[in-house]
Image (cartoon, rainbow, N blue to C red; front, side, top):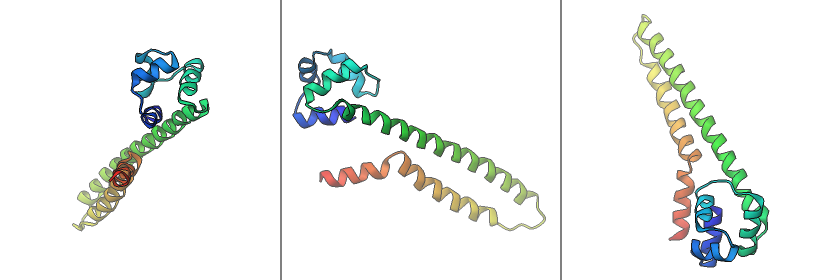
Length: 133
């Protein structure tokens, strides 16, 4: 994504960047789609874009961190489902017919909803959209 943004700032197409960096268009496409690139390829791209190589590699570190957050969210979602299933069984089998479990479910669901929207970048996308208008 960062490479695509840097390329767009220069007003270059993928073909232009490929020519300037002496790298194939297919390689540029692969990198923009999240594939890893070797150091020589990154040096060529960084030289063409007039940026430091670490500027191009910084995105990979952020991407890995985001994936870690997403995995953590999915893990929390699974834990929530197991706990809620257990609480529902307790609620159904108990002598009292109170609906307390639904309040816990509602609170937990709202938390997971907003956490998921944040982790998967929905709020960031909305902020970016507002800045562009």
